[in-house]
Length: 328
Image (cartoon, rainbow, N blue to C red; front, side):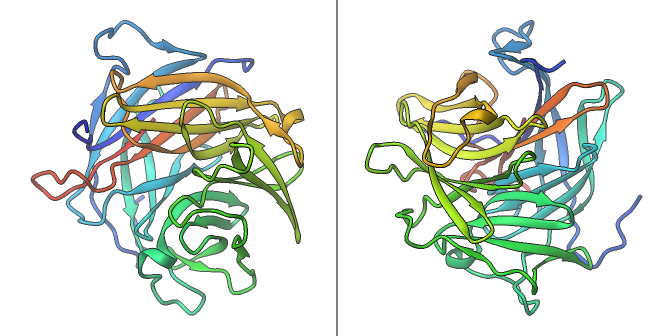
């Protein structure tokens, strides 16, 4: 297995068909960042990969022993705030610092509280705290959990994230999700306001990734073609209603690989089997790790940014005890 990377950040420009100090009571942590200039170190002059253009990246470190394990990712609409959840039940919020070229250069005012239940107690243990996916709807945060498979609703109180007393969790038992392969990706369609939920790796009887479309009390299936052994790790909608899905693959022989598929909005219907188009594929020769989180930001100039984050599974601890993550 290749040596896991430390915390990284990289940003892509989507090229297809698209033209203050914290005073909260949450736990603050310091995060250091070093720049990743090239996505393919052997060819530093190359910036285009598939239908994306690489803009830059960061490697992040922190002395906090819980830092890492990030899976779900979102950025605020204006791209100024980063939100992420970890599979240890933590919620990361940080202000984004950009350089003169509008590339992410650092994070500041970072808060890293543990998720809380409806009575304000910390959610503990892997069974209930294995947060794998994140979506934002207004002031509400939706988080997908595996093992105890569910999508739950959270709101911010004193910079902490509490399960919403007025919202009932969406239970996902009975959909044949394996213990550690549950709702790895959730995304809300801007066109229909339906919630799309995808399993990480839970093939249905026809060998496809299982997906669900949820609106109110109605839950209907759809499926994503499973090819080349890739697991599905995150999803986010573009402003026009098309969907991007992030996938990753690993073997001891080949190391890490990742890809992004794009699905037209017209495909996204109940009982459909969707295949999409591969718009980015990357191997371990490139600056990737265990890619698990994806976020999309539409900029004022009309461009679309795709940001990714990785989960190093806490396999590497640096001298200051910081685990690895990676974002693009």
